Length: 415
Image (cartoon, rainbow, N blue to C red):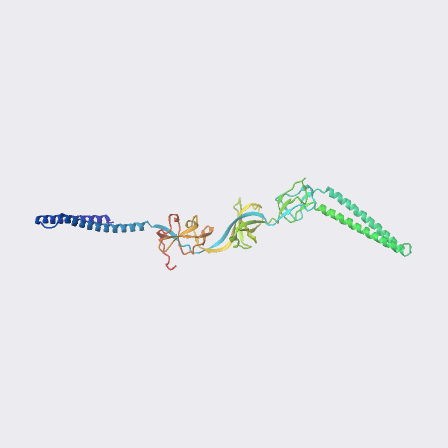
């Protein structure tokens, strides 16, 4: 710039003018002195002071205008250059991430169905596959065996008595016509025969009851499936009050019980696919939601989505897992991670307005994908968003927005 040169020239001109004024005043003073005129020394000094004040004012005005121009140019040079993007609207496959535990889809507890006793042997262990009706454990039945033999003998005795009663009745019927036996005797013999026959049926029923009770001493599998737990050993005494001795996953079917927020539960339906990844493995297992809990926990405000899974050795009931559930397609702006900032008030972005000034805009983010972060609320997709370096900006800062290496166009003022 020629700022210094201009000031120097002005100062030189002012100096020359001051010298001329001094020379004129001195000349006049001398002239007055010579002529004996009426100008006093005080008037001469006053004229000199006024001339110097006028020159100083002119110099100050010129210097102030030049400084203001330089300050404006410097302020324009200090405006930060920022890269901005206009996100638009993008269709994104919505996902919900949840955590929960692996469990049997239908867990069947198995215990003692009969009177119990001492465990003679255990035939299966946890992790074994069993068929419906297969014996899991055998209870000692030596006492019950003797009872069965005794009752079987009682059945034979009753049957023999019934045969004798029938024979006596048959002989009496042959003698009735000859008058040797009265009709009353025949009625008595008939009743005896009927009673003996009934005794046979009672003895047989008692024998069947003993055999059924003895058969119930065996602990059997109610359905085919996978044995999850075993809770008894040979020699242990068990009864109907011993509780659960085996747990079986019906058909080996498993599930993940995913805990979801109330808002996420509303986005799902039965049949939606999900990828379940157990802790300790990076391999996901694909399943489907087969049931959504009809209630929400009043304390946690969460519900349970039950995701059906096929059997696999890596899926262990009781284990922890995470699930990525596909919740449909979402159309929303998507931004890179660098454009979204966070503080104690939540997530926000910087928007460059039509005056190229920065505005803070609070947003609500959604799914995080490989392409970016979905913005669920706060943007309509047409804004100019600061891509990076937002941490160095403050609301109201003047910036120079650049998109793709070119100065970004300002938005229309009508919106």
